Length: 487
Image (cartoon, rainbow, N blue to C red):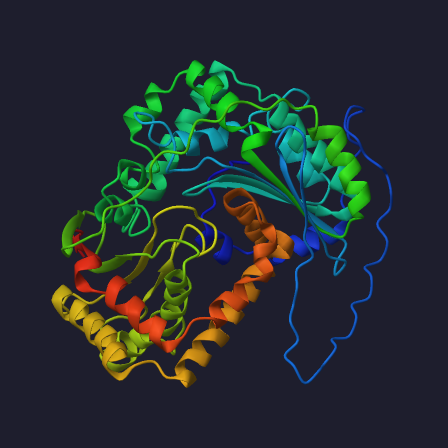
């Protein structure tokens, strides 16, 4: 099996309906003697209590228990007896943005290295261990973290915790493994970007055009020369620096006993030594004062495409939450203003998509400058200027007509639905993703239960203020794909 980076786009669109069947099948094997296996049969799923209805709107609350081990590892536990499944996620506070200069793509390369064997599990044995016990697994590299997760039958939780601790404690770093994975990553770049129409558009391209700070604007997939230049010493240093427990968060979601899970976590993770972590680099972006426009020739594309991006407000500010609601009004769903204007009314395109942290996550799982971005592929007889004019018209209409309480309430309903979709995504992984992100970035995974209230604080006046500052044309970057393929 080839492990490759899973963008959230892929997670959303993959056929994950097979996961539940796989997990509930309880296909298991006898692990080697050194691998802990309780052998405990999983009981039937606890009955779900009927919802309590009151005159007030029922509030859903995610159980959160949060603590830190002596070595600095952040631990989040969130029991859920809905199904006999457990999800384990380990997030390391290293991503595209803060990888070393002159080693572009190194964070992603190292994600691949984490599947090449550890002290007690040989190459591919981590994958086999999870799959033969009825589970699924994957890893991905994002702006501000690299993550690994497993979804397994609940009675295999201890086994997976042991395995994650084993590779955190000692990855098998060899020249053969490095050379092999350099080739795998270079091939992935060729297949997913260089040899694909619209490859890297806009998720990989736009940050490089819109941002000025190298950390936000370099090629996250990695230049092929930089990937070739990575040495064994680079890999060892990277592992010792960024894959230490004090630079990580461990999340367990699902059907488990918290006290039992704590004992396993203490046993397997507590003795892993911490390491000094370098200070976070300066990620700040200057205020954009002039619209930027760029054109990219695409030898494989047959139709033109356009992407637009606006710099976001700082994370967790009132304007940040306001932008989340403006995203719902302008871009999310078939009732959004841009879908109606570009697809339904004018027929410029068949779809328009995007959002905050589009294609690489969601508006919650990043920790630095970000773009609100939209994109579309359109007919050749439609000019880029006409599309941008529609965008300006819709933003101006919001500003001139204002956003009344009815429209604000609709945006809140859509946001609430989107948030609940995220929390329930992939049998616990969506919930684990938010909990890990808030633990890493805010030291407060319980923020997951405060998000809805933050959006409710947004007023029509705040929305107008946010439009004026963040949706102004001078805060915008436009990227046009010029098709070069002959039909």
